[in-house]
Image (spheres, rainbow, N blue to C red):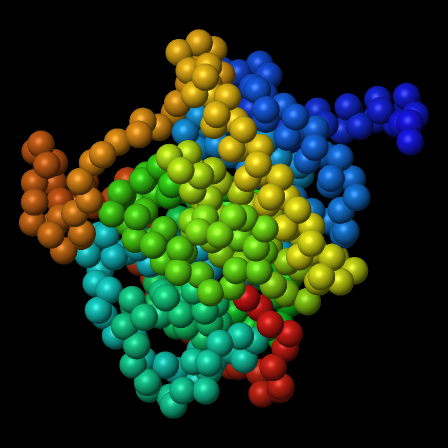
Length: 364
């Protein structure tokens, strides 16, 4: 079927307008990614509901996306910022991963997870709660960690990282105004994951620990589903009523890429699943071709320069060892965190009383 000339011109205009992002040093999207950019735009024109996509090749910093800056319901992808704040406070010595927190009645949420049925006062280590929050997407575990590190601190850290569309306006309350309480954008999530993939989110130890937790994800029916068996992907899903999200780091040999796909106002969740899986496979194939093309062209165009060197550094030092080790005259505090100095930690007073009604649809 032929495409009317006027429609083709509109598509070209949309391609420019819908934030297909490239590095400042590049004037065009290089190599196979130009084809991917056009393919992605055409695919999103048939998308169900409202969608946003951000994809980045970590080694070169080359980016593309459609509606990547759109603020959308984050659902449980907001649990990544919660994890980041936990590790930020951990690296400055406020607590360690073996610190035990006790379940309060106000922590409970029945949207997803089993911790809501545990007896009041049950104790869990921070390490265990992180695993439950990310890999099982347990909402009650998330509320325990939000209460511990402080919702205001989570939001302040996201602001310092330049994530202007990412905010946590309440605890996880599946029966509340959750669409507006948990917000982010594909570009914000991609930026967070990019820093993590580069070992630059807080510090290298924290980045690698967070990636290891994300790699243990149990909900693997979206981004990972169409990829070849054995593909390593550290990711977090989000599901809420008419919303499906999945954001992660995909390891394509030595060439990781970051992908964030957010969908909302879906006619059905199955339509969202098919859309996210389609974007995931297109990205995997395109970034694979780009890696091959880049190797053949390295040393030439500035568009294919690496922004991150491939290294064989030893494993980074954990905070409890780091705080006793001086590095080139730096204080332990300077070594412990890459974020700017922050206001004192202010834990929240706790979430509002939990609803007594039956569970809401899952928030993963």
